[in-house]
Image (tube, rainbow, N blue to C red; front, side, top):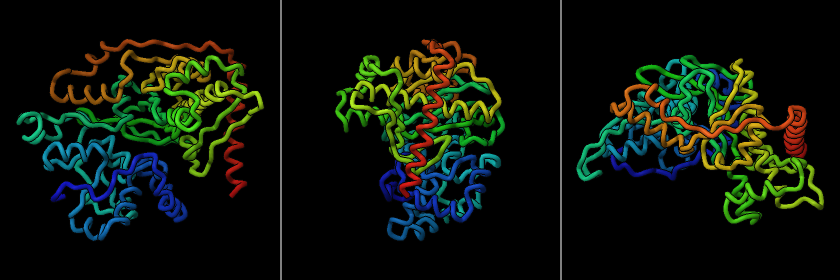
Length: 410
């Protein structure tokens, strides 16, 4: 707090190093309480157990935290803290809702959750709207000018805003290292019964918008595995060409559970698997099956969203690096049987952050102004529905087999 020096390295969302803490909380029957307050699954994915782990692994961590010497937060908190010259320790509702310490119903840090993990509440930042002036930059930045820091949101919530999913029932999916699908559910939390998380999308003009979210842990990182470990190609872009030249028609199934399975399974122990391999299986076939696995995992999540929300989803807005892959987008449309809308600007997270900041300082006046800027390329289903059903059933069997194998090995 006094020096601004990090006490430990940042821990990324994919890290599973706090799995033991999560398992202990589950064994002590805390998962339901955590889910009821935060809308989240008890998983190493979220911040709370990472904070606990750091306090346990630095010298006098707990004592220093309790004395008010240490501060904590997500990456937005750290950036604003630094840019403001260590004057503003803040976050927004969307990031706070991902810590597993924030009550999304009461809209504040939760005493019981903090006590459960022995995290002093004095460490936690002030929570504000996603679109507001959080602070001004310190004089040493930007040639002495005090620039307003006017927007902050979680990565995927910013993408939801950037995709202009302002209406209840609108859905976007970001294709990156993982995949992250969010549905705007309006101004009330919508508890999931099908393996999704309930989260805050953003705070705007004093009102909270909520969302359902499903996270795929391995998507683009599976393509990176083909590139870096198996040396199938030199750039991820080449994966589309290989997939289109594959001889097999979706015969091979890859379950890319390299770090377990995310939504809707939340299976930390599952390992990756490949089904249907023969002596004739080629790198083209494996590349195609790996891209297919991304689409299948997203179908799992979209189906869960339909069940939870009761909303018939007609289209999915997409962004992120892998959304540039036309083969993947067409197969995604086929396997989901819905339209895929890919905007001209696929950097929706950055765009959403810009929208939030621009609204806060009056560059844009309202959400209607933003809607005029949207142009998209649309993919529509081309595959026979009976073929789609057969393929998806094979995927479900493959996932079940992969999960069963892990349990049998244990």
